[in-house]
Figure 1 (tube, rainbow, N blue to C red):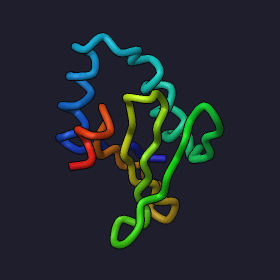
Figure 2: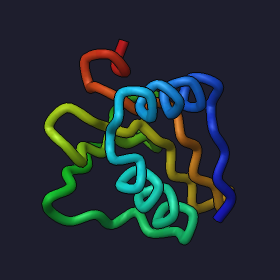
Figure 3: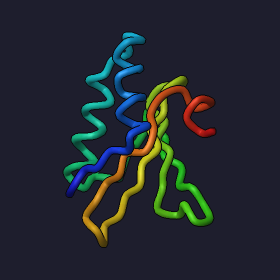
Length: 91
């Protein structure tokens, strides 16, 4: 599966590193998505987004850390949109 990254995601990733978060946790999630694995179980929580964003998901993996991504099996692509505090990234 091909991984693509939004410009916002790249900026968020750098900010998360500066904040001292466990970036290896996010890297593991990215690796799983790259392998085509979109089935996360607790402690992860995944919510599908609705409307025109029906292929988008919000993955919560810490109380104050989430990832928004698009998972498209037809295009064989995982598009990473944003990561960070849920209130900051869902604007």
